[in-house]
Image (cartoon, rainbow, N blue to C red; front, side):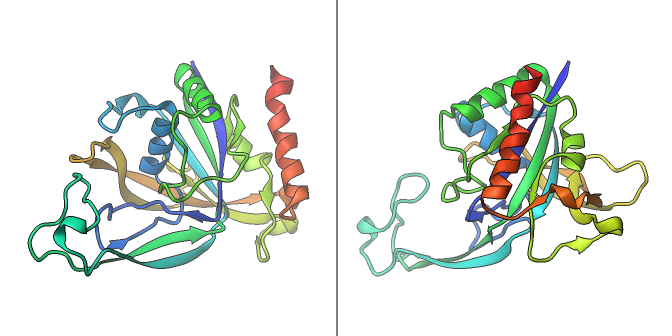
Length: 260
């Protein structure tokens, strides 16, 4: 038996790296990746880095882009000018050896003020376990990187019969300064799915973001296809950022209690 839940991913900064875990140029995708979401769930559930991740394979994810945010690049420096024994420890807990003590320079990219709503579908027992963990996380959930904590509310619904349908019809979204307008005053937003829409009207791309292992010394990822389509939502789902938007979110969250 399958179940579903709905998440809201928002915060000052998010970063969903797709191919540059330890590179000098650290990227971000324009929406939450599968590896980032599985990492969020695993952290909340208290799973160690080397844990088996195959239990998450049945999950199906859909991401609605409520606000794409602004791309921000952080010019980041670490260490430099110190003896080898006083340099910043490496991931292995050691210090850099020899003359390799120069300043480490990276450029780290983030999405500023982005908002995403995510539909998660899977086996009911797994969905229940994830929902419980997000309410009482073992480790702090974060939006791609540990420096990016989420705004609240994070978990909008713990139990939805069709969470993707919720994204298409009832989940509120913040009003942007500029929305692409569809017919009859509707607003157009992007929706990323793991299955191609039946009408074939989508743009496909491939990402290396399916986590095989989060082990510190053996991180591995498989590839998957994702599909971007534009959906039209009623203008009535849009609310001004602030109290109006928060109240609309809380009204939607009450659907769980009313269904219980």
